Length: 191
Image 1 (cartoon, one colour):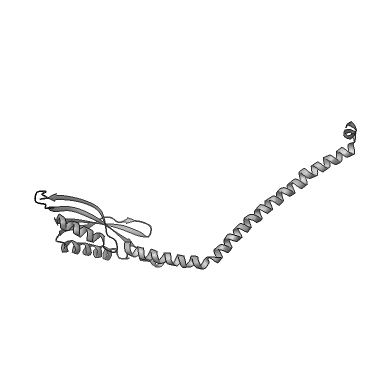
Image 2: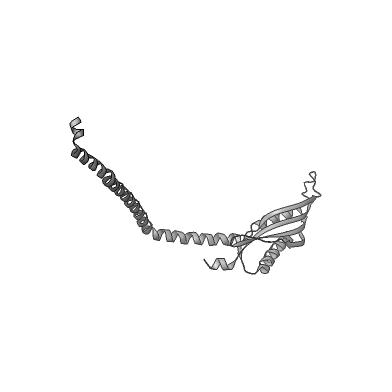
């Protein structure tokens, strides 16, 4: 063993061989592994892209269907209008006529400051009403079934002449706040 250790040219060859492995072969293997991993990721991306291209027609038809459904749902909820005055008057007249038809008296109607949202605004209409409690309930049910949607946002009511013995619901007076939504035409047509 001592003879092997004293054999300097052999030891020098072993050291050079180990250095070549450490500084040449090991980095080459690491580089090769990184390239193999990179190629595997690229192949995976290529497969995903090929699947997307194969399903492109199906996705486009699905997008078209979804866009059509969004337009239909928007029509149920939003009134599309650029003219705020016409928007307000239209809703105000419809709800006041509905209440008058149900035997209620509307003494005052006011509009609160609209709340701006992304692409639409929420408008609140406050009405002071008096009349039969039963007729008010009927009117509210019909108002909430209107298209585009009119929602009961808040109410403060005083009920009088309600008698359990006579099974009367009595009379009501108070404030009712409705929410309606207005979508801007510019955003609707730019899609």
